[in-house]
Image (cartoon, rainbow, N blue to C red; front, side):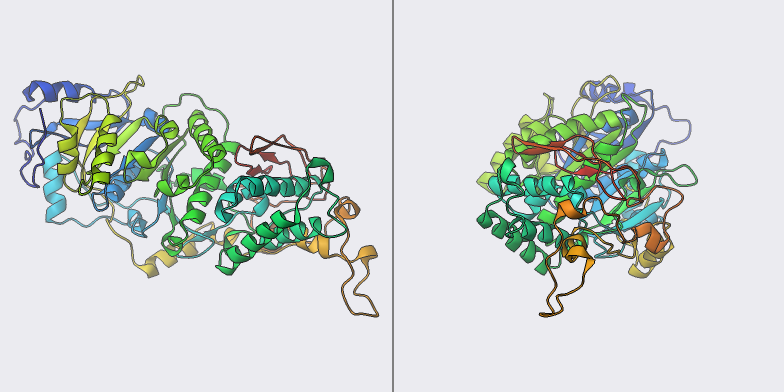
Amino acid sequence: MSDRNSTPGTGAAPPAPGTRTGAPALPREALEIAAGYAFPGPALDLGALLWDGTCLPDAQIRVPLSMLNRHGLVAGATGTGKTKTLQLIAEQLSAQGVPVFLADVKGDLSGIAAPGQQNDKVRSRAAEVHQRWTGTGFPAEFLALGGIGHGVPVRATITSFGPVLLSKVLQLNRTQEQSLGLIFHYADTKGLELVDLKDLRAVVAFLTSEEGRTELKDIGGLSTATAGVILRSLTAFEAEGMGDFFGEPEFDTAELLRTAPDGRGLVSVLELSGVQDRPRLFSTFLMWLLADLFHDLPEVGDADRPKLVFFFDEAHLLFDEASKAFLEAITRTVRLIRSKGVGVFFVTQTPKDVPAEVLGQLGNRVQHALRAFTPDDQKALGATVKTFPDSPYDLEELLTGLGTGEAVVTVLSEKGAPTPVAATRLRAPESLMGPIAAEELDRAVTASALHERYAQAVDRESAYERLQEPRGGKGPDETTGERRPGKGPDEIAGEPRRGKGPDEITGAGGSGVSSRGKAEKDESVVEQVVGSGMFKSLARSVGTQIGREITRSLFGTARRRR
């Protein structure tokens, strides 16, 4: 039986006092669907079942809280309500004590911190789905990539970002990516910290100089041509104003796991509207956040609720022109991170935007309407239908007829089995459906406990300064006035650093989430394995005063001891 799209206001009104309602009053097919969503444990309420053009509020469509770490997909054409669905799910997660991360590409999710405004549309929707709607704001932390926008700056060091993700940002080919991996390997082994872009340029320049070109000879070497490509890419990247994204203080992803004093989960909103014209950068940065969390979190097995739910908006950008090795790393990360209590929801237009290997890991699906105006649209529609379990709906007809705020849903039951496909009229978010005023947003950012810790960029001594040091500690040549050649890494590997770490300069840290960059006294040796296009390594530390234990993941990202 097919489900025709119904218009707002035609659904069932709230029952009168004393009226007996319940699932037995539902049509047989609808009753079978509703039975698949009758979970006894904690769950999020998505909305009410749609059947034959009618909203059936006695058949509530829900998703078990314990299954939110089994990942999900929110898809649909532009303007069909994907953003409001994210907001609806994030609100309920926060209310149940689960932290949430939202990538805000369009800049309209800041309203989650403010109570929603009731109007005729909200009242109508609440009545249709039997929702007791109350305007509610939720605890939120506002972040901005590189400080571009309204939010606490989110930065990463080059060392932490790693060669694989950086190669994608710089659009390097496989050979250049492997060469960049060798450069990172060399910097790790010599204790040359790559904090920002100038550090990486300095190391590349050294390895192609007369003095340094033999350093990588035993492990393949670095050709002048490849080094030139990397240097030109770095220069162009910085000329586009992207240097601000790399540096210190580096953002500690443990900040995303916090709860508010009242026990509700903190909603971390990363504003990306100021960098939406740089999709390759921000999508890769989101992957860095996820990879960093993957490193640090312990295994928790099957928990009753996730530690964090991470919404990855504009997900197709992550997969565009991605190498096979990069896609393999994403697949493994998504598959394994659920055992650490993190759920990942990819948000995009159609399921075909997500590779099959990743799509197969997404157990919860909310599919909004699709358009079928062109042959390509028709093909995408057919492919989408094939990704759903068998159902009594005519899904091709249903998916092109859904209204705004309606979706086709299938999730995992508490036993891990897929629920029946359910056309759903979704609930209305209770927070503000739109951005809050810029002045209010700026006040919230300034008042944040993270502002003092991350707002001010720090440029301490790192690889660039170390390689610029004159030999023997002498200044410029007295005859020519030119700076003498810097010391080689072997000469400076054991010397104590003179620069202060970010905590010493800013006075941040000392309580709450530990910051990166604290001095450590342990001396050590770094080893890294480069193979099969992926850059892996074991725990190792650097022979310097602030030696850090580094573990490189599938993405080549580095974990530092916190």
